[in-house]
Structure formats: structure tokens, C-alpha cells
Image (cartoon, rainbow, N blue to C red; front, side, top):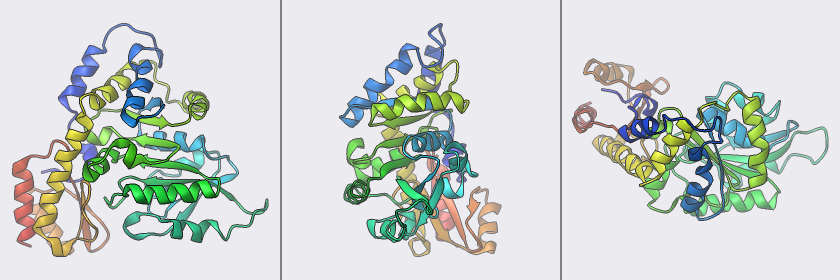
Length: 331
């Protein structure tokens, strides 16, 4: 019974169907009709003009998006437990040709204007210190906590006031929107670039980089090729993304995953280490308790010496969720 990661989930049947439908001769790279339809589709979703590029991985999406906002001699300010810091094996420095990550604090892996200022404001404006060029936040955060629209707005105001770009890592953006019950535009706020995740939410191998500045997208088209991410049959990536967006499948899938996480959270609320607002549950448990759960057939990741992480997905099976809920309540 799989609760290790939403990356372990099945591919949604609608995605397979869309890829089969795309299996016909068309222009190569991103010249096909599906890839050319992405800008229009996302512009309608966000209610403002977008330029959209597909890539195969979330790491590429984050790093290529940031490459448009940060020069090699600059820095990205992010939470010290952000995915770009903890789980991308130095890829930001590689793609950004040496740009640095400056680490901020904040509860539940979320930054605030105050914690950002603690990092940014002491930096002298001279050539001897790395200058911040952009802020990156994760929606939902690495601990499954969601930025409210007013929180995003406050960070955007901070960024604009200091002339910084603003990127959002949206590997679980769908889960955040589903939790907030607002529009995609409201959940994103006044950002420059969004890494819109699909693989964790029913996709096979496609993520979208959404730019709200067409000029930035033009530069990244060249960088995507240089980075080895311009796939020759890009229509198969575009097909996955469009299948998820059209008909709001991305939201439907996220709601299922979030609901499953809420059931697990309700089973042992006294053990929760962070609010459960998306599809991740972090809870306190001993090594012996973790082994007892695994002996019952549950797969999940340890999270340090005395905690574990559970992740639910769009294909969460009710009987598996119910069984784990009972097991958690019985610890």
C-alpha cells in the first residue's frame, strides 16, 4: 500500500488517451499544433497572457524558469528547506552557471517578508557580495502547507519593492489550488514564472514552465535546447498537459489526493508535525511504530529519527487509506 510519493502514482487514463491521439505525424520539437496551443490554454486559465514551455522534469522547470530571472553572479532567495535547496542535487547552480541560493527561515517551510528581509537587507550593494536577483517559493511548501493569496501578495510586494524577480515552484500547485478553493490566478498571485507540476498529479513526464513575461520565455527557449530538454516529439508532452488542464482534471485529481490526506490526518491529529493542507502528512512516530506500520504493508518514507511522511495521490484507493487510517489510530 503505497504512500511514499505521488511520483509513484499511476498515469491517469486521460493522459494515456491524449498521448495516443497525439501519435500522428506533426511538426517536430514545439512546432506541433498541441504545443502551439499551450499559450492560449494557460492564458485562459490564468486570465492574463502567458507563454508556456514544456519540459520533462520539475528540476528542469524550476531551474530554467529561474535562469530567466537570475544572472550567474546573482542569487535566489528561498526557504532553507525548499526543494531547489534540498532535493535538486545542485541543479540550480548548474543551470544558473554559478548563481547562489540564499536561505531564509519560516514555519512550515514557508517564507515571509520578515524572514526574507533578514536575508536580503544585510547584503551590501557592492561587487564584493552576491546580490539577490529573485525569490522562489514553493506552493504547496515542502511540508505540504499552502500560501494564502494574501501571503503571496505580501511576498510579491516585497520582491517588487526591492527589484527582485518572483518564481513559484508549483510541483503541487494543483493541490494548493484545490485546498484554497480559489482560482489558479489567485493562488499564483503576482509572480513572474511558475513551474506548474503535472507528473505528481497524474502525468507521465511533462511539466509546464509558465511565464507571465513573454520576453523571458524567448530566452528560455534557447536555454531549454542547450540544456537538452527540447524533445523532438514535443507533442507528447503537450498532449499530457492539455489533457490535465482541459476539463479541470488537474483540480479533480488534486482534490482526491487532498481528501485522502485529510482522512489520514484525522486518524492521529495529536501526532501531526505540520498542518495538513495538501496531500502530505508529516507525523511523529518512533522507529518501532514505523516498523509496525510497514509490517502491515504500508510503504512510506522516514523523516528523521522520530517522524515519517505520508503522501497521497490522485489514485489513492479508499481501502488502502482506510486501512492506514485505522493503523495510525491504533498506534
